[in-house]
Image 1 (cartoon, rainbow, N blue to C red):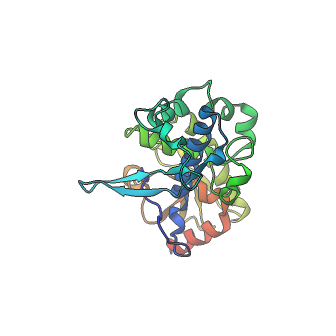
Image 2 (image 1 turned 90 degrees about the vertical axis):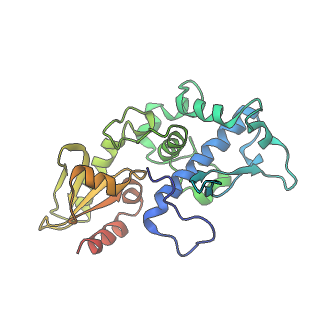
Length: 260
């Protein structure tokens, strides 16, 4: 899983485009935490500041994803203290509830069929609000839940192994197939297929000659490991579904240049 594959710190203007989706997942996960904590504490989400995700290095040298939120007031209003391990709403319990309790927010609202059909990433019925408008282009409730689950459960693979049983990836295959079909708009005459032995992973030719192929992958998958497992060669390039959905022309141009 690509939990650490994101640009952090003061790297504006120098961000690697292929890492944007992981950063978006971490930002979305933080936003979900903020809104659920505010709901449980009966306060406005604006009482918290959702800080930029980071990478923490432990004393043993291990690198871990680091989601941060703080009290909005300069001297601290004390709300973050309620999320400590020995408090009434420890963050570990909060995350478990977010992921698994179907009768609580966010699962209750996110699972409404009308919402799932109409909301491909985020909207004002789920994660978007006026105060996080600068991040609307990055917010994605499915990615946020997947990032949180990957933090909580090290064995979670977000469908990498072909298991899409978890709520947040249950409709990923259909979405990925639709994105692959949409590439015909930008590459007339191209072919849409799937990876050998993995009908859940769509592929599409990057030109009419069918000599170069794009492979639609989940943003949190390790593409190199996937290619080794499935047996894809250098004529294939991974294109994550987050990028393909938001800036297809840019992504396809970059993919064509990469497999020349």
